[in-house]
Length: 275
Ligand SMILES: Nc1ncnc2c1ncn2[C@@H]1O[C@H](COP(=O)(O)OP(=O)(O)OP(=O)(O)O)[C@@H](O)[C@H]1O
Image (cartoon, rainbow, N blue to C red; front, side, top):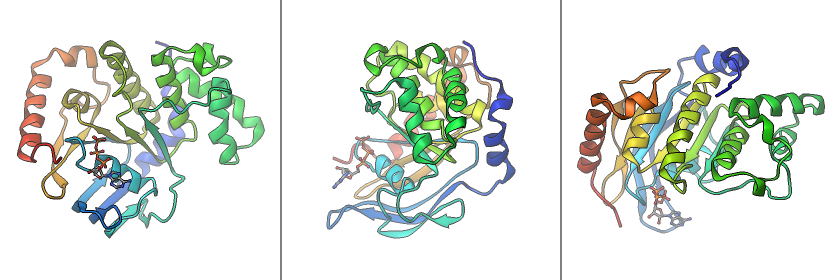
């Protein structure tokens, strides 16, 4: 699969690696929706530059809520959430967001869809075509620039969404179960795409899933979220696979089997479904 050279992402890589300060930091965070029950309590977590950190936990434990706080769409009820050392106030424009929903605008071509976030951020008109070309090349979609979303397969749409969430070179990409609605074969291919793309860009990623194998394959570290009556980060497990990992070989390796068992045990110790 053709990809752009790693030097093309050097600006991001430089930013991400220049500092070892956490990109985001949850300090003693608690959260409840309105007058509802406390969903999350005493969450302490750092997301380091250039890492893929996955929140792994049972359905309803509060993973998406943690992402929404980083995006500035929800505010902590208690505690402090820092992004690049500053408290998050209002919508965080330094993040890209990718969910399982198809949020491509159907009346715009893929090129038009990718231009939108650049225009919103005031990128000079002359720079936009080059940035789009680069972002599409990275996910091997250069040939689809002029197509409309309806003309793309499910996997191509996912890749277009991946390109859109990284095109503005956000400080962090938030991915909320981006492949949950995708069939297994395609999901495997997209895992490779995500890992390769984020490594090339040295992109910091906060990923959410309840799929143990997905967490093991994609992550540098996995934060186990769970507990009752309110959830917290119970444990952080380092993935031993490093950069440039071969996901195909990994899937059939003993190490992969072992780390999945480790995650399963950690998840089970954190408690099962909350609802
Ligand atoms: N807007 C809302 N108002 C009230 N309660 C909410 C709201 N959004 C989520 N909740 C509740 O907060 C809790 C945490 O939800 P959240 O979506 O963060 O969990 P999750 O771990 O991401 O779940 P899933 O894996 O099923 O997506 C759940 O009990 C959910 O029902």
